[in-house]
Length: 342
Image (cartoon, rainbow, N blue to C red; front, side):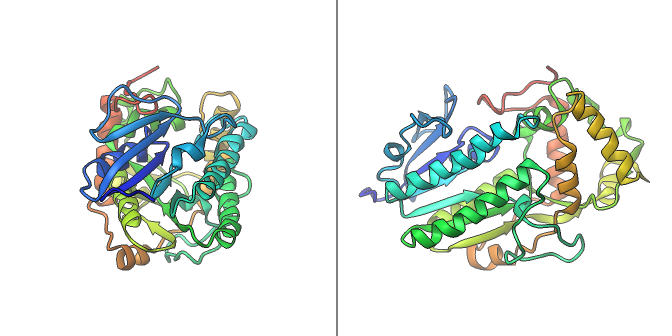
C-alpha cells in the first residue's frame, strides 16, 4: 500500500471516454497523491500529476503486476468494441485481457479494484419498472458486448470468493456520452464515413419509433465522479448509474423537433443487418437486439451509499453529444481524436 499521504491510483484504458474524465478528476483530487494511466498509445500531454505507461492488457509480455505494485486502487476501464465481425478478437481483449488485469491486481496485493461493467451485463428486463443491482446479469447471449460483460460478472463472482481481501466494486453505467467522445462513438457505431453534421434536427423530420427502444444515458463526467467516490469509500458490490429521463422516441422527438413514426422491429433490424453484413455499419444487429431488451436501472443504491447523483439530465447529455457530432469534437488522445468525416 502507498506510504504517501494521498492515494496512488492506476487506471487502465485511461485515454478513452471514461478514462479521460476520471484521470482529470483524480489529478485534481487532493486525496490522490499520484495517478498512473495505462494505454496502448499514450498521449503526448495530460493533466499534471499523471504518469503514463504504455501497456496492452492482451499481451502476455505486459508486466501488469509491476504497474500495479504499491497502488491503493486499480480502475479497470480498458475495452474494445471492434471488430464486431471478429468476436474472437474482442474476446481476447475484453475477457482474457480483463482476467489478466484481475489476476495482476491479486498478485500485486492491490486492496481495491473498481471495474467498469455495464447495463449491458443485465439479462432482458422491463422498460418501465426499473430494476436494482440484484437483477440477473446473464446479458443477451447473441451480442458479443453483452456476452463478454456477463462472462466477467461470473468471473468476478469467483474472484471475490478467492480474494476476499480485495474490495471489488462493479460499476454498471447506462450509455455514457460527452461532447469529447462524439467523434469516437460516431466511428465505433456509425462508421468512419458517417458525416457528423448529419446529426441536425432540421434533417430529421421523422424519428423511427421502435418498440423496446427505451434506454438510459449518463454524462461521462458524472459516471467518472461515481468511480472517484467509490475509490474513496469502503463500499463493495455493484452500482447502477444513470440519469433521468429514460430516452425513447417521444423524448427524442421533443428534443429534436421531429415526429416519431412507428417502425417495425423487423424492418429496422433487417436494414441494420444488411448494412453490417456489407461492412457499411460497424454496429452489429446483435447489439441492436440486446439494446431493445435492456432493463431500466434503479440507481437508489448509488444515491444512498455513494452519495452520488448525476449533475446533468439525460436530455442535456444528448444535446451536448449531438453538438459534438456536428462539430467533430474530440480530445487529444488516439481513441478520442476529433474529426468530422473519414
